[in-house]
Length: 520
Picture 1 (tube, one colour):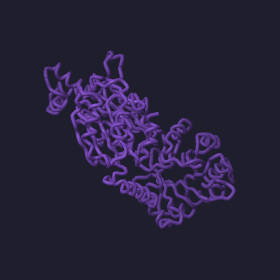
Picture 2 (cartoon, helix red, strand yellow; picture 1 turned 180 degrees about the horizontal axis):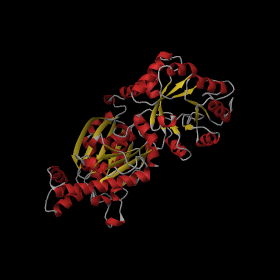
Picture 3 (cartoon, rainbow, N blue to C red; picture 1 turned 135 degrees about the vertical axis):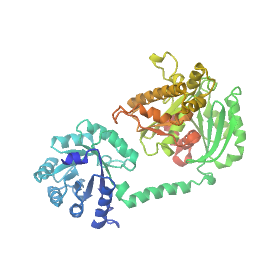
Picture 4 (cartoon, rainbow, N blue to C red; picture 1 turned 60 degrees about the horizontal axis):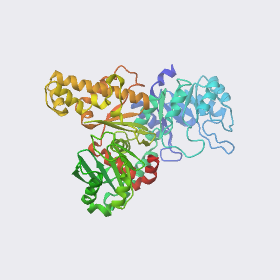
């Protein structure tokens, strides 16, 4: 059955740029055969001639379309009944057409009737949930997100994952299509309930892919680290040490680390960094600050004074701007790390990300639809569970807890030592590590249900310890793919926070507007 042939599959759209060097039947057929050789199970082909050429070379299902630019209608995809009939005669198994609610040469019902009279299946290219409802009422077999973002207004950059999920509530036969450029975006579409996923330009339009790379590389070379124009001074104030770095994009050009004298207070910490980095003064124009605790409207407060004691609502941004004489932006350190991983690390290319650092304590950050959630968002380590008494979650899971449990077993060692003993086969140590991983996995399951991220990026000395991630993942084996969190290891290491803070503050990425939005 044709439907089963394409269930849970990749469909490759082999549509060359019109009048480009690949706009020839031989190239389209070559793209089609290469895609099928690599595991695609169906093809989307434009024009009657190209459908005929590809059908002669392959047996896989073909979704056929015709594109026309009409003077009296905005509908471009298979606008006429005659187009639909010709595609069916040429060998298309599924005929797709524009199903938007706009002035059109033929109604959706007329197209469906003509295609089914030829014994073929139908696909409605929709721009909205209402388009899908009308098309299903007219009897279409599949609905697609093909035209989302293309019927007015500014064209989006990301695929419309929300529309996929909404359509899935109407029918299981949803085909995800449009702006799917990266594997992680295709995964998001599948997780949202797509019956099959179409990828086109990223695979078969060399001109488009080359343009994406050219633009990215050009921007990178324009932001040369030594010019100073786009460099940012990034500061990460932690409980035991403070790091300052000159950052350009994802590149840490120079860095310095000084001790955080706990009793000295924030004025002294900032003054020390100012003096230590005085030689960089003419090499940056903005400052990003990542700190433990919570930042709101430029102020800094401690959530756990035991980590770092600071006055409540300390005016961090004002102090830094007064001393350094340059605009500054402040953010929680784990939220900064979440943004760094989203922009340059393990979360690059996804839309929704949660970052979880499992270390001495537990912190986190959240990025939803390209925007970091600030304030209290992401402080997962401070969650309290009725079943665990009144102590925070991190007190039953983190490195401090692991060391405490070891002490109760008669071993005065830190968390690193416990992991070493576990690897050497000591059962008591393996049990402690296993309990920590189970609780961290349970937290991730809860996060998945609350925020539905595309990925949960795991960082920190405990989270990245050998075998810990695998232990966490082992607790998801019985879950359906839709419910199981996707865990990936952080890539930026100890630099994630300073890179994220720098990017949010950086002039090269319109940091001022981004920072204002994030603070608001």
